[in-house]
Length: 232
Image (cartoon, rainbow, N blue to C red; front, side, top):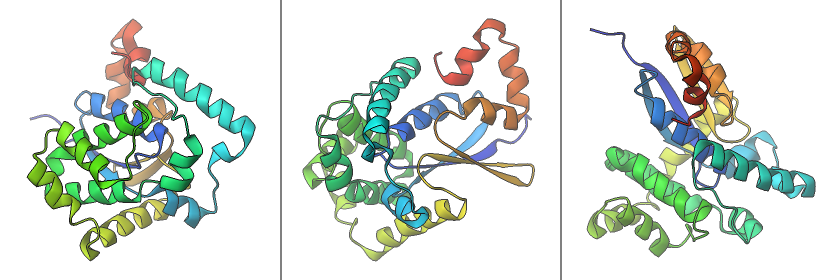
């Protein structure tokens, strides 16, 4: 019998392209790294407000860098990222509240579908430049992920219930308590200690914290860097 999986929590919002990058790397390597990956849908707007942070794209130079950086990282990690044409409308006006409430409902009632539905919502907003704020858009993502129309509609009807609202609020608050000032954050629970890592570019450090996985990665010789950053 092998060692028990270590627990990692990924707090994410589909409005965050860096969350998508971190999500895909962790989903690809959760078996290789022997981790119990817990997906935690959260609201980035709530975290930004709680921490006093501002979206980096509000500064023109950062906005241009963000656009270039996302393109490079998407190609590197093989995630089909495309910047929305009306970026500020997507981020600042439409937001992700309904989408994240829907993912919260999925996590409560159909957790086995959470990975696929999350990915389809990211595909809509960050690959095909499609809406994720309208009910029909959320339903389309859920159905493309494999849900029946009836299942998706039933979950959509619950996004305004106190149970779902409170769950999303509690998860967002949990991220804030870990020290989040943006998303994604990965929280690693290892040997009685908790490590909060911000961003999608901390995978090499995460592998180091996991310990045995560093040795396993190094044993692949020339493929070690590729495995860490998600190319294989």
